[in-house]
Image (cartoon, rainbow, N blue to C red; front, side, top):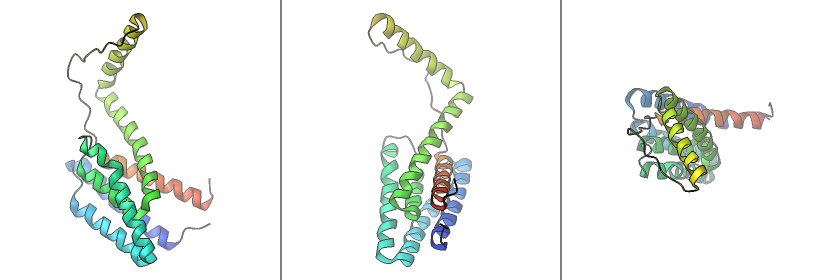
Length: 183
């Protein structure tokens, strides 16, 4: 089974948007609205023009799913609004099912990215040591005792647009592999 042009075009466009957003996030720690909003409009317009009302619903459903998947993290202060809007733009091109797959890939990449940053900044050894002491205390006393950090543990600042770009590209690649049957 080969991919059709109507499937390839949105992948190329969203790949370009992801590339630009990853560079922007890395350089300025922001994903600009002038990138995400037009991407949402282009995704909805493209799917509406190629599939009519059904394409419109597919794309809008993807935008809403993409926004919903990251909204809680934004509201809790774990990421910026640009990241949320970028995932909405991804949903506009890939639809609800595609944006969920992209979210899963992004979550995996984001987790690895965070662990690598922690390891590079030396924070992971302090965390492991503290939690190891808490487990040791629990083992001997059968009571959970919280051991506060000696110094303020600071999570490294993630450029999550990079994780969104890599995770989404990997999910699209995985989808292509599954569709073409070339494992």
